[in-house]
Image (cartoon, rainbow, N blue to C red):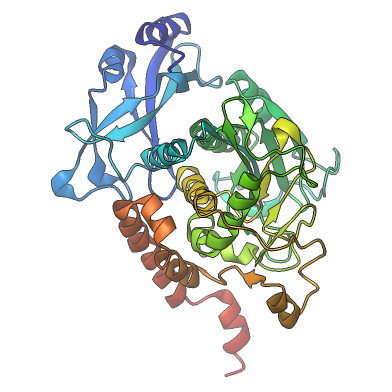
Length: 444
């Protein structure tokens, strides 16, 4: 049930002196797009009558079927705090519909909503997610272009003057709070120039909306500090990459379906089955949760990112970790996800994986409570621990061989995603890098 009505939105626009509305949506690759309209067109937008050219958006439709309708989510209305008093700008996040009014199957937000309907058929009422997105801050040059010069030399939980990104990070937090975010933590991460801001969990659609808004705010405020914020998973060699650990749980009404106070570890049979499903399909959904060539430079041993499919009650080298909190806070943390994932598709894929475990009543293997990084191949094989895909090419092959994950995303999304990623892989594969020139130019 929507909190805001059409009349509420019109009233808020008038009260805040809003002059422009951004009708925002997300393309297949997770990039935020928008159609900006003057306030005079607001009622038309609220009646779902604003059209745009879908053939111009990555992964949407061919030119002969280009007309798409924007259906704004009233509850996503927010005024951007940094816009001018003379003409403030507000935002509403939209679902994409076809001209006949039916949901467009290539809209990532619609893909997630469809999977949530599958969840409800199993008796669950909510899929709650708490993300932990990380990012780097780089200085910009005199032309406003990003450099590879870091803004600080800080480390985990460092403070100023070592952490010179502190003021920027604080301003980001203030802007997010002005937009209704409940910030839980903000700190410097392990690598120099790397930061993390955590916000409170919410249901899946709201969380994915928040992730997209978060990225926009981080980049906007960083630029005001003459910094470039990047969510690229591995911008620098030899240091930790950026992840987006995703804490998730299923609810039935007000009860956390992952909690069982009578079990030794506090985890319910539902939680165990969900974990087993995630482990079963982890290699397949990696193409979605780690969707770029660069993503796989992060998923290597030694930099706190998981590269093996296992779970643990504490071990951070495992793909799934179980945080210590119990009761309503009982959750699993999937640690492989990176921040360039399209959040709607990534969460839909992981939900589908977990639900498959619940449907099939799967049982996970024993938890692995010591570092997997120090094990040799033979020991990992004995424990049934498999590697995540080594590169995008392998990830795509495993993804396309998994009927559960591909069915959850739908034929349209799978087809367009494959097209885009095969082009990306071929461009990468045929590129000549500076490493190759350093290795071979003089020697041969």
